[in-house]
Image 1 (cartoon, protein in one colour):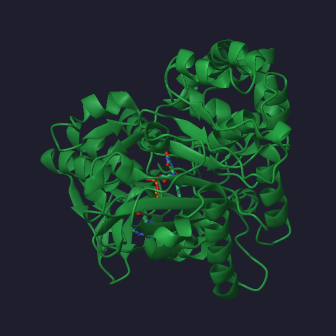
Image 2: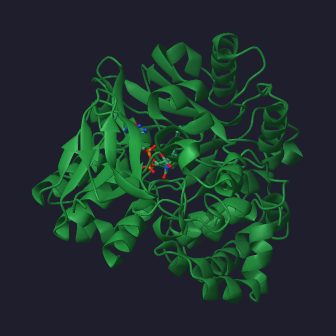
Length: 511
Ligand SMILES: Cc1cc2nc3c(=O)[nH]c(=O)nc-3n(C[C@H](O)[C@H](O)[C@H](O)COP(=O)(O)OP(=O)(O)OC[C@H]3O[C@@H](n4cnc5c(N)ncnc54)[C@H](O)[C@@H]3O)c2cc1C
């Protein structure tokens, strides 16, 4: 049996696994289908002269210890912390004044956020630090579980902890209403949390993504917004350099067409051009559906496992609109520092709920809810001089949209621009060029099944011991000996954390 480890996929998780294994002396070959590394956290010139992040642009959840362990700064990673975490601009004038409440900005510093909230509600301002403390306490119960394979004893501990259990299972909007009366504040928090689920904030189980976000953020504060200089691909570049310096071979334009299995054990991989690479272990960071149904093949698997796999939900698709602008747009009520974090364009959680409702029935939302970012407000080098880049992401979209994406795509583009104009009057006049990535593009170009941002939906029924399916989080509980999952679709989940890749590497090294 070969000592080599083959890694399928050069997104950040595959690269983390490659770097850790190579440092431990293992022979590693990583195979990435695309010409560039980074997967859903990569940067492309989708508009000439502009460095556009195709997916993740906020790297605030990336595990800090990996930066030191893999010497990522030495290998070129430069992270810039945004002054703001999230902001909701003041809503358009047609909203009744009583519901408007002006802009809301969440800063990394609790006192600064509370000071700003006084104008909307002194009650909410007083509640903010207490809310953060409560959130930190609940998140602390999960934090240790996210960095390692979950064990049965952890499940027992969580089941008898009423606080976390309630937060995980209740609707997020309900939980937030217990604390805050300002709709835009609740919208900002929903906007931070509900990015990779088809569930709206009134659905049970939507407290979990907020806890996940906070558990990865840091003690007593929301995860800061961190952007890599020159774009998210800066992380993949540093990881690849770190892996390469330890001897890992990183190949692009290498499409894996089969994971080879002999007598229930992994034997290597086969590439689309016919090349076979022997390996005693394989870590796949492709989605669970791609890994098992396309690359391993159902006939190699127990029927019970295949049935479970077919039940995995991939809901929660998104579209990314990149706009090249003549100037920074003016979002009502927000000064420049507030434009550096995530800009949530929802007046209240019901705007998100309405988008989720439409998606449930296969329709485009009348008013897409948009998470916007202005990366050039922090790093002007991402666009040519005199230009700004606006990344607008419409979340809660249906993958199988009525009429197909060839007609729904142009309609979505119009609705997104109209929505941006409502929040930043005059922005459409600043647009010079645009590029749009639709849910169908994320599947066909990045292998993201049904366009899922986090490979599969982040809901409590697909988390921890249940990710991707009941009782199968990674290698030693998966049905093929020597095969590990290491991408966003397995424990602990999606976002740019590096944790699934790290967990797979650590488990593999433990044998
Ligand atoms: C629009 C959008 C916005 C997002 N915003 C954020 C954000 O701001 N912050 C955040 O933390 N997260 C964000 N995310 C989520 C985050 O990008 C992903 O969860 C994360 O990047 C997944 O990383 P990964 O390494 O597990 O998988 P991926 O990045 O999907 O990498 C898997 C790789 O495997 C390759 N592959 C697949 N099949 C094969 C094959 N057969 N052979 C060879 N290679 C193969 C793919 O090409 C891909 O490069 C966003 C995602 C999207 C789409």
